[in-house]
Amino acid sequence: MDKNKNKGTILVPVDFGNYYEKAIEFALKLAPITNLTIHLVHVLDIKDWWLDDIKEEKLINEAFNKLIKVSRQFNLPESTELKVLTGKRHQRIVEYANDSNARYILMVDNYPFAQEGKRIGSTLENVIMTASQPVITVKCVPDTIFKNMLVPLDLTKNCRIKLFNSVAFALKFDSKLNLVSVVFGGIDPEKSRINEKMEKYSKIYSENHIPHTKKLIKKDEDLAYQEILEYCDEVNCDSIIIMTHKETAKFDNYVGAFAHHIINEAKVPVISLNNAASNQTTKEVITSILDPLNIF
Image (cartoon, rainbow, N blue to C red; front, side, top):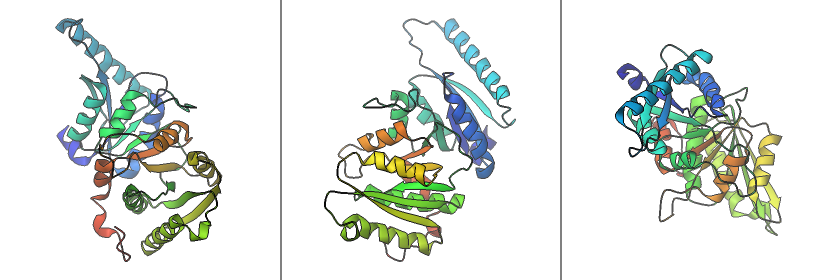
């Protein structure tokens, strides 16, 4: 365990539901290119008032045997760690991620492709809000991993952090980055503030030799996420990187409406970053990023 911890891990929470297999399949593709060890974790939310110690032990053993079966089903590497924990699901997942030196948490939503106001599952949402690692929501396993990433851009301060992280991902995975944003109403896209910011980030990408594209979409009404997702399909992105909330929020832990829609409705994996996860992602590559414009 200690050896694997030092190596770094990919944490895959397993709920034995209908969709967790996609996260395992994604982990199998991600592990070889990151040299990370896969950890499968199942959390039993046991209520002490209706279970005695014998029943708890039985449930833990049954869950562990299920994890063994899953590991064999997917022919996971011998280095794979299996763990059954008890307690609040999101809390134990986040704690284990920190204890096991997890670099990424791969999860699925119990309600994939939710529409019109449906929310992501509470466990997933709470993990996204509190994890110190990027949380990757997996609905499908693309042919490529982080090779053609979509980077939605807006004018909030956290956008600067997101762009910093996109550079970190691009340098690590040799990615192409696709900047995209939406301009509303009668604003001239070429004269907009968002276009000015996009040009600055494009220069950062160029200075770091990162292949990239940039796209401003003109739209008369709100709901920018729809245009963003359509553009994602148009340019065949294999992932989307988002920040889950604004830096300036009074409370750090919440998932904004835009992030909800992207996580719910994107067809490709979504990398969700809060401020803590953002710092974790970039700390290993910060010295290698060129920033001649002093954006970061």
